[in-house]
Amino acid sequence: MSLKRNLGFWVLTALVVGNMVGSGIFMLPRSLAEVASPAGVISAWVITGFGVLMTALVFGNLSLRKPELNGGPQNYAKALFEENKKSSLLSGYLVSWGYWVANWSGNVAIITTFASYLSTFFPVMTSSNALFKVMGTTITTGGVITFIVCTILLWGVHFLILNGIEGAGKVNFIATAAKVLGFLLFIFACMYAFQSSNIVPFYEPVEGEGGVANGFLSQINNAAIATLWAFVGVESAVVFSTRAKKRSDVKKATILGLLIALALYLSITLLVMGTLPQNELVSSQKPLVDALMVAIGPSGSIIMALLGVISLLGATIGWVLLSAEVPFQAAQQRMFIPAFLKENKKGAPVFSLWVTNLCTQLFLFSVVSQSMAQAFDFMIFIATLAFLVPYIVASLYQLKLVIKGETYEDARYKRTTDGIIASLAAIYSIWVIYAGTADIKTFLFGMALLASGILFYPFVPKNADTSEKPAD
Image (cartoon, rainbow, N blue to C red; front, top):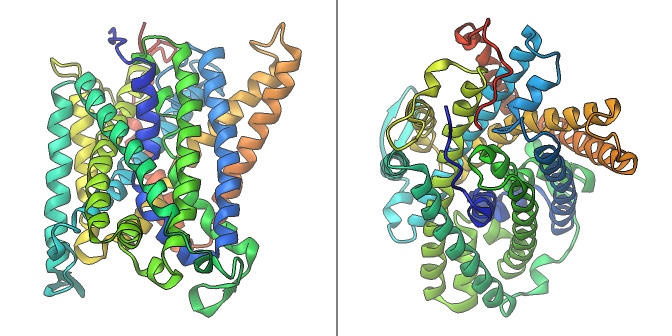
């Protein structure tokens, strides 16, 4: 089966930027303010930015050194073991499953953030008026309305993608361009409202669960998962490499997208922290809206909310597209359930899209009984931990190539450099997983979700040639 190579450099870059600069930029200033002082927040951004840069370099390098392993990180997991062996198939399948789970669970966080910013125009979405109770859980008016809005967005994007991936990619490109332009306007406006007193004291212990005071290192650990969530999606161009016009565009789009996102994150986080007092930031459901309202008045909240809605619409399109593509590409490599191979006349992975969005819909019920901010925090924790599995695998595969010298026959210096980069990327991912054990209940829930893939492994063909390429 041959896939159309119709995604150019700028569309790939837009997918990377659009998928990274999604819900994170709109909600993370509040999430980070809860667990760290300004010094801890900035340190977490710097460490995460470096760690993700190492991971991005790994993905970009592998896309050039192993262009035949296109379509996603699951191919690197399979290649870690001897070809056509059960261990190779199982490794590829489990990474495919984990990466897929990470994608569709992360979609819940993006969609709920969309609803959070839309509530600026429809305040009833935040109503805490109790309607009824189910098994001791209170269902609120705002929760029900938010659930309906989220559902409409999810299935609206679903049918847009069914009409063609290329068209959905162009819509995402337009939304991403509007997003970046809007963020630049936000940066300039908030520079004039910045108050250094809002980030003083620059460092102080932050009270955690049970009244325990968290010091500097603990703050960085607690912020690690949240800041990594902001960069999830850096591998988007790699996942769509089978649809890229030029293979060389994949690495360039990955690095450029990361640099754009990093610049936006650092600028906007600092400006929000300096515009809003700490107590207001921690309690905010839409921190960027509140910051711009302080900067330029009530009209600022309308502008930022509109920007947020447009931006998150683009991010939703990009992530739903990516989520459906992951099991489709894995099935192309015979590392996933064969039914996920089904496409419609427009070339969209129709079966994968339906199953992915039904799973997302199931988790959207979390907004019925929680605030949008609580639902966001819960889902990014689970999704980010799941994303770390393919990140570690890609780093280990790069190390395997370095140790064996494969593809480095005439590049000894480059071999050493790539080995250092891959080692740093692996260490960073392991550190974030360690940091995630701080919230043990959510950590175990996320691990159980990953482990559930074993139940469906019997449906994966065992006697097929797993060396087949997904596309020419």
